[in-house]
Length: 586
Image (cartoon, rainbow, N blue to C red; front, side, top):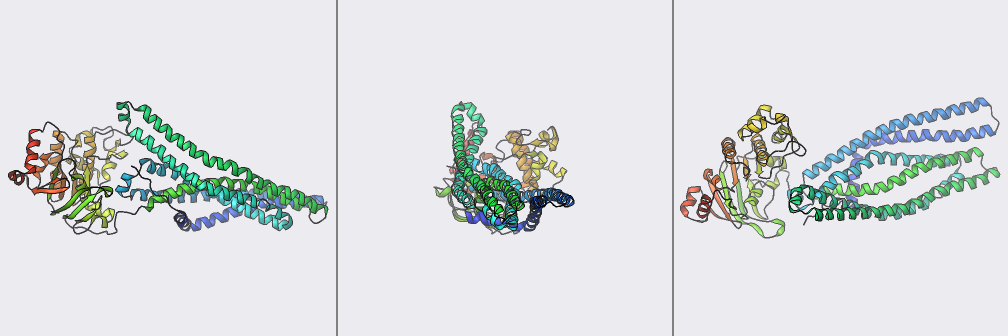
């Protein structure tokens, strides 16, 4: 049953946000100053307009009025320039923050233990990688600058109103209790609602991905209707989850709008009374009224983005939660020896279930070639995963030149041991880019030599653009055998001390296998090789054969020794030798 990745709690989210803000503190300071300048420039015009009203009402000369009009025009121009500068700075900062967020998230996803990835729904990972990242990105790019501008506009407008007339300015605060109370009510209910909404997107993604990946099965079994119904159910659940925050917004917005209107009504009533009493001028009332008008749009923006902030916060908690899974890699970055592998009293069970391996003891000398055989389910592939450091044993120890794989950094481990399986993934990119994953600084000639060594020189040269042909998702489709040849070519360039081959040539036909074996002979020479055999002919060239049965080693020795013992291996060999034309489940 797939599990869901963790979601970060409030303290963790706040800590991550503080880290981002601290890392970009100086750009944020300069951006704040730029927005403050833009807002301040925008407040000059209402203040001057109030002065202008008083001057006109007082019968001042036209020259003074003209100068005030020019000053108002200059303030509008200054506001436009400073706002453009602030917007540009905000865009650059937003992209920088988003880049850091995206890079950190990518590192965390790539650092997830394989066991966690295998237990997690593909829809959950896909949803966090796409929808959640985009949700936060939109808020970083647009929301943060808007919130910053809105906050500064509100604060400076209120300050300016108090400077003009503190009695009238008090009216501006009349709607504050309504806005704060309504917003707190909304926030308490919105956070869990948005978290639920985002979780439903994972279910939708999982349903779509499963259907697309299993399209041939869906078509072959004629199960379009059940899959369509499952996707429809997921979509309905997502729709219902979206309605919850939508209903909250429809109740919240009218209350906030009421908080906007009350101050304006108060200013007009109180202002009129103060003017008739001679305690305030018409210009002061006009200025405060305009400042109050200037508050409406920023407050509206803040309210809008406050709702989006709750969604972004829920998405950010999901993104941050990926990093809460402890790494299965250590911090040792050491140069290992020649490739000795030792397993001592090793037992292993998946998810604390029944032991797949039990009390395995095996000492593989540097440069030795081991072939592991046994019936299906004997634990061969699990043994390979433990040697490759993909999993740590439940009991006992596995060491590579005296170091436990889980104590090493990922780079140190993969520089030393490489595993190739029959399920090789072709990454979206060119043929050469796929092979360069083994060694980034390899030359064109080295890539060609690596392909030749595994028998892939023929088909790779016939591709439309040669090594520059795009393969993988959306590109030129490779056969399973060609995908395995790419994987083996990567190993050629990687040049590890220990190589684990789990059915690495299972997709090759007879001629391909012979050609690959000839090329691999040079690569494998002098290296420690653990080969998981699903065809017993690979045991012929091994230095030692290890036979597993129900997770235990029952026989070891070279091919001839085991045949002479007339034990389980000899019996398996006779069955296989007599049925080479028929698939044998080993």
